[in-house]
Amino acid sequence: MVAKQAEWLPVWRAMVSCGCTITTIKATTVTTNPYASRKKAYYALVLLTIVYSFNFIDRQLLAILQESVKADLDLSDSQLGLLTGFAFAAFYVIAGIPIARWADRGNRRDIVALSLFIWSFMTAISGMVQN
Image (tube, rainbow, N blue to C red; front, side, top):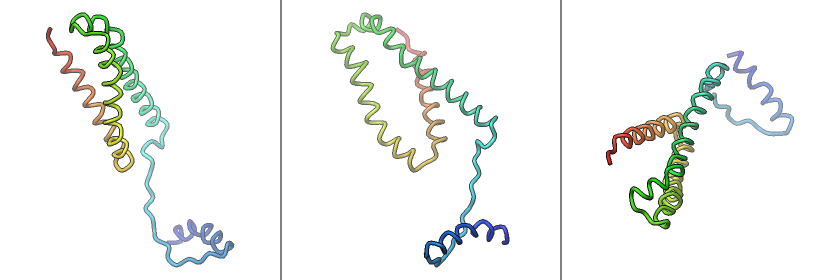
C-alpha cells in the first residue's frame, strides 16, 4: 500500500498546488509492454518488414505482367485500367473504413495476423489457377 501511495504523491501535490479537489482516486491496472525488450521489438520490426516487402512485390506483379494479362484475357486498355486502378482503389476504400474502425476498437495484432492469413491464403489459391 505504501508503494501505491508513493506513486500518487506527486499527482496529489500537483492537484493541491493548483487548487483542485480530489473526490475519488481509483486504482488503475498497469499494463506491461510486450515489446519492452529490444530483442522482441527488433523481431517484430523484421517480421513486419518482410511481410511488407512481399506485399509490395505482390502488388507490383500485375503492373509488370499487365501486357501478358491483357493479351491472355483479351482486355481493352479501358478494362485493364479499371482492373489496375479503379478496382484496387475501390477495394481499399470499401475495406479501409471497417478495418480502421476495427483497429481503433480491437487488437491490432489480431488484425495484422488475420490480414496476413487472408493474403497468404489468396496468394496460395491463385497459384493453383490453371489456364
